[in-house]
Picture 1 (cartoon, rainbow, N blue to C red):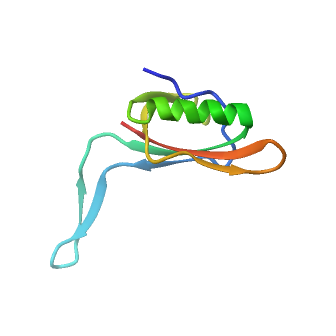
Picture 2 (cartoon, rainbow, N blue to C red):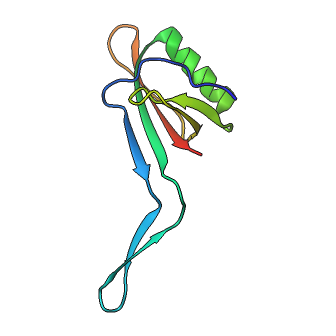
Length: 108
């Protein structure tokens, strides 16, 4: 399994945790909660500030692995998650030869 490149993750990177809980209400208004899966799944939004060469490396990695499961190390906890890309990587030029790059990954 490929490993997501270890570029630094900026402070505005985020994780959304999904417990699979869904709230509905009975006719009386009493809440009912259903759980659709047993473990928490995460969606990562990863922000990078990259040079032109690093941007090319990440885009090449995306092209090669966009349909595959990959290992991703989340910098906030240092744990490795099995993930897949969800959507294309977003690239925006900033100053000089630097790029703001955003990847979205979902835990499998």
